[in-house]
Image (cartoon, rainbow, N blue to C red; front, side):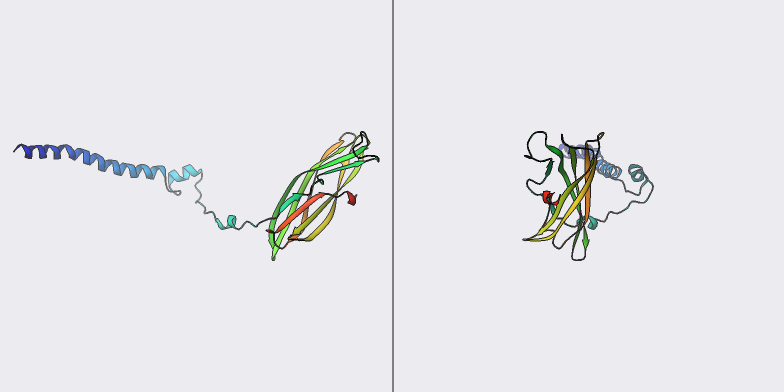
Amino acid sequence: MRPVRRLVRAAALSAPVLALSLGACSSISSVTDAVTPSASSGFGQFLRGTTAEPTTIDLEQYRKTPSCPRIEVLPDTETLRVTSGGNAFEEGVVRYQASLQKTARECQDEGDGKRVKIGLAGRAVSGPKGAAGTIKLPLRVAVREGDNITYSKLHVISVDLTDAEPSKDWAYVASDIVVADPDSATILVGFDEKGR
């Protein structure tokens, strides 16, 4: 008789625990719904800060970003130093000096290749032998695809230096470059002293 009473007591004690467990399951799902509401629900609109319908992002537009050739500044061409004669590193002979400090590029598909727009920027400074006026900075831009140079052009940038502004930032954008295979191409830039 006693074992039967023990079973009845155990069943009576386990019933509330089972009810609490089942209640906990339903409350967890309701909490989950509250934490991750539908984007269109009132709470979802509150979290998004708008009542407008949610939009879908097309991931393909990000996967199709065209590859773009890298830009390389040729060694010893990032600085242009123009003197009034004598040794270029002799004290007091510099008319002006310019530096190429920043490069950037972007590409767009064009036919079988890519159109490349490059940006170049730097600073020009008047030296001890300098004078107010316009200086010319000869920048060479070339494209090497494999073993071949497929583009080479001298771009001349004008910079106005004055007594009030003996140093100035300069910037230039070239957008006439087309490459057939951007993965094998390199854009070469630098000052070309022979172009002065």
